[in-house]
Picture 1 (tube, one colour):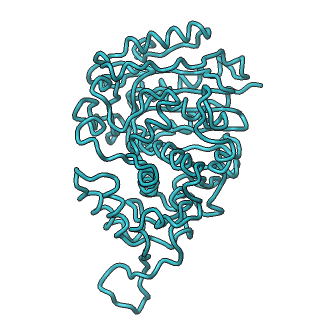
Picture 2 (tube, rainbow, N blue to C red):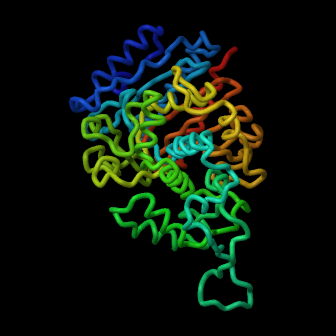
Picture 3 (cartoon, rainbow, N blue to C red):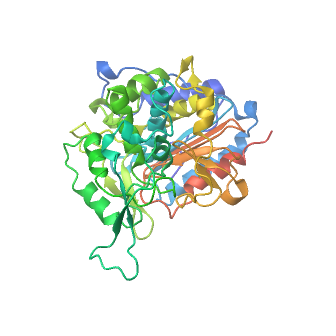
Length: 443
């Protein structure tokens, strides 16, 4: 595959880079925008890497590595973005968003960001915290009464016959808002635990007409995996976070995010469900075959899950689609202390609270050693144990389709990868994004 086929954007002067970005967006293969979708994205603050202490030559290693994944057919294409000190120094589209149709990857391609929805939903809830609507130690039953009397599934004693895989005991303490923001509530999940089969049944049998409120009510009928606060376990907590936003605000999560986050920040391509006019910029989804080469899982058309009807289930855990540029704007707001372009979303001290470790020494099996968890984010607590170069205090998360981001306040650095393949654990692509970004810092 040659350079043009990969749709690589070489390092340019700031003015040329900005012009190239505008042209790429204009030439994207998409239907004409409707009147409701004609809002143009704000231009990104692009600069030469050297002006913020990074090396253009060394950043080429990141481009070359992503090209290698494409050439090996391990991904179809990718968009990568690196920013430092409030300036974008690398923003590149490579490969194709839909190879079967010969559609090139462009910098405005729209991706399923899955669990990268979680930080956005968590920020939404914390905007209500700043309005005095709740405290972190409040029981969620104060706002969601279905969680008032929770029980915990435990393993029966060795000599105890129940005819069931677990027995139930009363929860030692109520689930708090802090628990649902930190994945320590103990909810049933599809990863591990005694309730795996029960949770899978709940998800599988979900009525297509359900709202997230219906799902949360059904989730409350299942017992917990452990007493709230006793462990860290990844699961559906942020759907409960999103439901709290709805109950406290009187709006759907979709409406609230649009009004309080997306519109103020100029996130014009972030949705739970794509408008028809933008499906032409959606990326295809892939899985690896037995040789690790990509096979189409979902075509990016009107039948895709994030486009087809009904449009009523707004999942805080993983429902959004977005672009690299939109997601950069959201996290530049976080890195800038809660405001971007004179639009304030949060206060600086709230962001400090969100990006502190709230989970003590509970292990984060999904991240490995060296990490704790804040309110919606994993947080680096020990650089050596993490085996990655991000500074202590950096915060991050990723999505199920291989998207990932991190924010490093010490280095004033943001990195974003957008690609679409699941599973992806056979690849080092997410780790490569980080290591190849940090090696380009030369100041």
